[in-house]
Structures are given as C-alpha cells and as structure tokens.
Image 1 (spheres, rainbow, N blue to C red):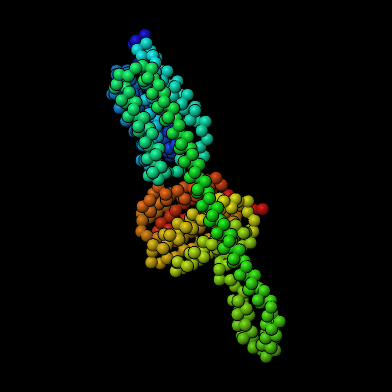
Image 2 (cartoon, rainbow, N blue to C red):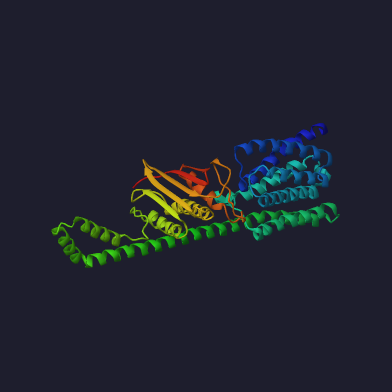
Length: 417
C-alpha cells in the first residue's frame, strides 16, 4: 500500500490543482497563448508539490514550495501584479488553512489520506466561492492602492498566523479553532471583494449616466437655441420676403443670393454640429464635439445614421464617449490637434472611424492599446469596457498608427427600427 501512496497523492493533487485554477479563472484572465503555457505550468506545479509532499508532508518546505508555485501560476495571467499577488495570497491561505485543519484533526492517523481530505475541504471552499455572484467584467477591474492593501492585509496576516501555528506547539483544539477561523476569514475576503466590485461598477455607471445627463442637457440647450432662431426668423419673415421681392424685381440676383445666405447663416446654430434626428447620438456627439472644437485646431465630422436604432444608449455612450475622449486627449498632446469622426450605418452594421493626431509610438496594427497615463489603475479601463460592448454586439475594434496619426475602426451589428 505504501508504494502506491505517491501515485494516490498525485491523483488527488490533480483535483486540488484544478480547483485552484477554477478560482484563479474567476478573477484573472488569460488569452489562448497564455492558456497553453498555463497548462504546462499546472502540470509542473502538480508534479512538484506531489514530490515535496510525499517527502516532507505538511511542513515549512512544502508550504514554501506551494506558495511559490501558486504565485508562479498567477504569472501566466495578464493582470496587474497587485491583483495577482492578492489572488495568490488568498488561495495559499485557504490551502494552508485546509492543510493545517486536516493535520491537527487527524494527525498521523491519516498520513496518506490527508491530501484527499484537504482536496475535499478545498472543493467545499470553491463551491462556496463560486456561489458569490461576480459580474462578467470583474476581471477587468483593478483597484487603487488603498483598496489593494485592504484586500492584501487579510490573507497576508493569515499566512503569518498559520505559519506561527504550524511551527508552534499549541493545544490541539485551540490550533484547530484558529485554523478554522483563518479559513472562514479568507473566504469572507471574497465577499469583501464582491462589495468593492459592486461599489466600483455603481460608481462607473453613475459616471456614465452623469455624462449622459450633461449630453442631454447640452442637446436641450442646442434645440432651444435653434427654436429661438426659428421664431426670430419667423417674426421678421414678412420683411425678409419683401426685401427679397424687391431684389428680384430689380434683377439683383447676386444680392438676393447673398440675402438668402445671410438667412441661412442666421438659422444655423453654431453649437449644433450633428443633426441626424437620433436623440441619443445627436446629444452625445454634439456634447463631445463642442468640447473638441473648443480645444482642437481642426475637427471634421461625417455622420450618416437613421433616426432610430436598436442600440442601448448606455452601450453607445460607453463606445462613443470613451473613444472620443481618448482621441481628444491624444490630439491635445500634439501640435496639429486634428480629429476626424465618421459614423455610418450600412445593412445593419454600425461603422465608426476616428482619426486623430497623436504622439509617436510603434507603428502598425494594434488589437489593443494600453493607457499612456501614469495612473494605470484608474485609467485604461474605459478601453476594456469599449471592447466588452463591441464584443457584446458581435463586432470588432482595431487600432492603427501611422505618420503621427491614430486610426480607430469599430464595427458593430445593430438593427434599425
């Protein structure tokens, strides 16, 4: 029986490793290339921890190897190091607490059954964690330094307490109680994470709705100004007709054309850059383009869309709002300060093209842009939200840099009313 123990430990360890990966996948994201290397890393980690456990069982050597392996596995995910460290510490704390609970409860009576019991406890923990409802975009969110420290301090202190517990000689019942408490505390960290996520999403949504409110308010002012010009022209319409009639009778065609152009200019509202009849797009673009015209040297627009679209104004705000904000900010950092925006609908497909001047960077096609701002935690999430909305509508987004200009192409499937 003893000769088969390492094989049994290895088989049970495969389940434990898969459970750890399941929790990692909830909080961290990896592309196809990273997933391939992750599978190799999981195999190495599983084999290494099996060998170390078979030789040393639950000990300082095993826990150091286990902790290093979990941290190493998170490196295969494309996330900020702070988030990877938090996930590593929480998982290690859970796994370590499970190990010590089994060790203190059963001791040497279940020497080779310990991995199976430990995996069972980890399965229970994973099941509890999986019942916590996390939004689909949870992987894209990164917290600031204070929030990160709040999340890190609990598992870090748990590791210290459990390490002291493993090295010390406390009463068995007391050691079990502390281990269980550490386990419950670390599970509660996921609920704390959930609360922070909800607060973040609510703040983000409130900011988007606030911008929508400003856009609608701006559009209302534009409409009121246009109506005021119409009323003013209507009030003097009789005099304008008489003046035009005199010019026509005297064959002063050129003067009549100039007079009509003056009337046209009077009717034109300088704040109404876009007038498609689609309230959501008109309000948003007029709001953004008004800001662009105030700070940029050249702004060119070409908008051709129907009055009604089956597209949530919230989604539209995320895509147009973030991309225009980024384009305007990038243009401001150049001497040319140019912006070109094209939006059109063709056979149920929305095409958005933005070209703006920008600072030098590596040329060519880019599937994704990283934020150039120093605070990478609080910036760059807008582009991730844009990509999420584009994918939601089965579309594509591409960036292309050439000759100090950044071109953004977006395609989304939408339906006309």
